[in-house]
Length: 345
Image (cartoon, rainbow, N blue to C red):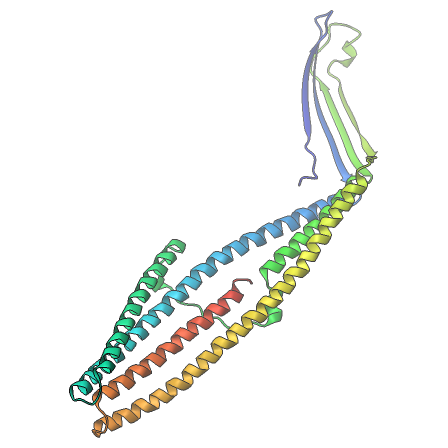
């Protein structure tokens, strides 16, 4: 609305030096440009583009906060799975220590094997302590981003989107498009400033008092109105500099738009490679889980038949549980990679 000029009201009270007469008048005046060689249209379009660019910037900041909170939520669930996995690893190490202890006492193994098993058990326990601390730190971080308990939130299920959809819905590109359009409309506004302007003009004057002097009494109580139009055009030596400067800013923003598009296309390709790597890890974990599931069944049968010890059977069951947790961990990693794409659309 900046192109709309205000309506001006003026009240004046003037006394004549050699008489007791006094002039008190009110004036309402309007001087409104109605044609500025396209400048009014460009001003409206400029304001719209500026608004879109600002809203896009706000949306990008909002998306960044949501992404940070969601990423932290995924990391909390991932580290919970890692803690459970570490607990199973510790159980297997404890079983290994028990097995090595029996073998050392029976003279089958040297004591160094038991020592190494104990060192491995202690290392796993220290890793568990680190994971527990990291979980606490992640929960505290999430609490600074949200006032909702992370346990009450359901994790989103993200899927891969196509590169075309990623580019067409990309907030960074949309913001730069608005900035480029803003600079284009601004260059038109600058040019129109030096072209002819047609303005509608209206003046209304009211005299409020009677004059004692007969020569001034004709003006007493008289209302006057004037209306029409004016055509103006500035002759300014800065016109070339200003228009060229505005055009350069538009060219720069247009070039930046192409750069952002290239960067986002490259980002998608890089992230796609990371996603495929995470999917491959998931497939390998599924194959390993199928193998361990079969081994657990075989080991249970051998344990019942007395061909394998219960320690061997428990170790295999724990290993199967570890592979199940690997599936969860790799799935969380995949979702975090996909989140990087969703944070930009």
